[in-house]
Length: 92
Image 1 (cartoon, rainbow, N blue to C red):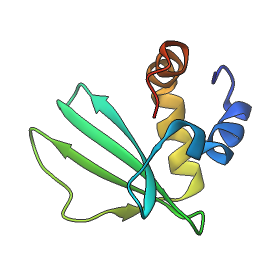
Image 2: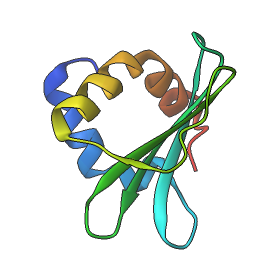
Image 3: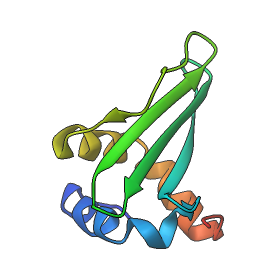
Image 4: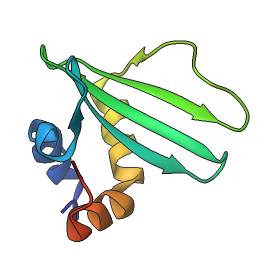
């Protein structure tokens, strides 16, 4: 569960526990409301994180590298959804 900003580090450290593996990278897809679509966060074996957005307004052409600070803000913003997924056991 992510109840404090300080818990984001632990979540990202254990990202593989909560994400699916596609053979190359771990990924976690979150649904967005405004705009309606998805945000996928990916982690590679080297520890590098990227993201990809796909929604009713646009699609990112490729994955985008993400800095830890921005990633932390995204995780914090989606903490309710992530916590619900943890409680419901709907992760990988």
